[in-house]
Amino acid sequence: MRYYVVTVAPDVGHQWFSEEPVQDGGTSLDARAFVDCARYDGPPLILKTIQHGRRFPINFGPFDMPVVTVELGERLKTLAGGDLQLVPARIDGVDSVRILNVLTCCNCIDESRTIGTKWTPDDGRPDRVGNYRMIIKLFIDAERTGGSHVLRIHDWQTPLIISEHVSTHLTRRELEGVRLTPVT
Image 1 (tube, rainbow, N blue to C red):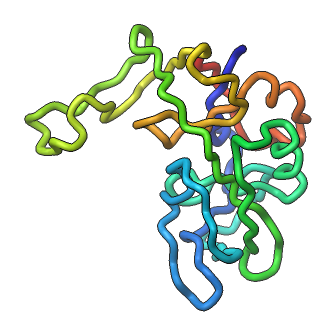
Image 2 (image 1 turned 90 degrees about the horizontal axis):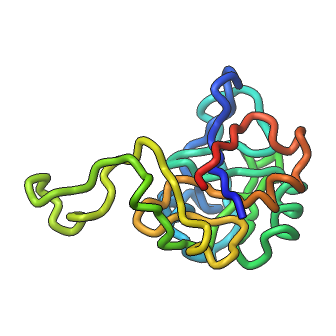
């Protein structure tokens, strides 16, 4: 199976962007909680706009937290099942959206083809030594994904990865504003 990393298309122009999610009552959440492959069990969230612009079916918030339309979220849930969680949110208290919380995290980097740098003891982060510090060109080993259709990578969780199965079942409109780059 082929896989793709999902990123903002370079030609989208001025795109909508939010602050970090906020719970009703004003408690701010770190957006990285939605790229850690961990279930969110809190209340619905509020996303406050900090950059007005075009909103696409898939947008990325702080730390590449994916925000999808309700309709696209339901399609992804149908295609990828337990790989993801849809967290209810409202933009500026009005429009309903979903934060796409990916739950599947695979140790699947193809070390023989991926180009990047790793943390060393000289970097002053002993907890990160041996892990990737930066990846310039990512490749994954599809055999180590367990057949997941939406996933993140263990120890390099920022990229949102989807399978060819998902990409071929989404319409051009649903993929508007994003670029799919092969990683297999």
